[in-house]
Length: 412
Image (tube, rainbow, N blue to C red):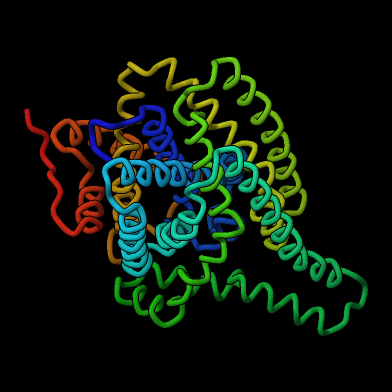
C-alpha cells in the first residue's frame, strides 16, 4: 500500500491498537507468563497493582488485540482489491505476504518473545483468503456466528477445569480428582517451582531462553494456530466486512457511530466490571481466572471491540487535523515496526540478556514503561514517514514479499 493511498481512520485505529495492546502485553514482558492471567502469581501484588490489573482488564484486555485482528482483515481486503486493480495475481500477492509474515512471526517468537501473534495472523490470513469474494453482510454475519461458536467452545472447554476445582472442594474428594487438579495447575505452569524456574530463566542469558524455546516450546506457534478458528479468523472476517461496507472508513453518520459506541461500550463495560468483581471474590484463583479472562469475557469483548471502533472513529473525525491524531495515525502506518520494535525494547529492558529487570516491577509501575513506549512511538513515526514511504520493517516485509527492493525515500 503506497504512502499516498491512505485512510486516516484505519491508520489512526491501527495506531491506537498498537499503543493500547502494550498496556496488556507489558505484564507478559516483565512478569511470569501466567501472571498475565492471575496478577497474584507475580511477586508484586499491592493494592495499586491489583487496581491496575482491574483497569487494564476492563478497558484493554483482548480489545486491542481484537481491534488489531479487525484491522488485519480490513487491510487484507484492501491489499487484494489493489492487487486486482493493478493487474496482479491476488493469490500471489496475498500468500507471499503471509509466508513472509510467518517467517517474521517465527523469528519474533524464538529470538524475542513468546507472545508473538504474527505467525497466528499469517496462518489465519491464509484461511481468510477463501472469503475474499464474500459480501460485507455475509462476512459480518458468519464472522459473528463463528466467533460466538468459538466462545461457546471455550466456555465449555475451560469450564471443565472449574468442575474439577469444585469437585476437589467437596468433603473427602476422591484422590483421582485431587490428582487431576494438581495436574491442571502443573500444566498451567502456576506451581511455585514452575514460576521460580521461569523467572530464573528470563533473568538468565539469551542462549538459555532460546535453548528452552527450541527444546520445550518449539511447537507453541503451531499450537497457537488453534486460536485462529475460535477468535482470530472470525474477527478478521468481521474486519473485512466492516471495510467493505465503509464502516472502517468513516462512511456512517455521526449519529450511527455515537449510538453504536454508547450501546456497545455500556453493555460491554458492565459485563467486564462484573467479571472483575468475580475475580476479586474468588481471590484470583487461577482456574477461575482462566474462565473469566479467556472464556466468559469473549462475547462482551466483541461488543467492546466494535464499540471502540465506533468511538475512536468519532474521535479521529473530530480531531483529524490535530497534531496528536496525525502522530497516532503515523504510528499506525508503522504499526509493524512499532509492534516488533516494542518487543526488542521491552525484552532488552526486562530479560537477563539486557538490563535484567524481569519481576522487578509491579503492574502499576509497569504502566510508566507503557507511557514511555507510547511517547517513543509518537515521537519517531511521523518524522520518519515524512522522509520515507514506509516504516523500516514495513519496507522490509514489502520488499521480501515482492522479491525486490521497494523505493523507500520520498522525493521532495
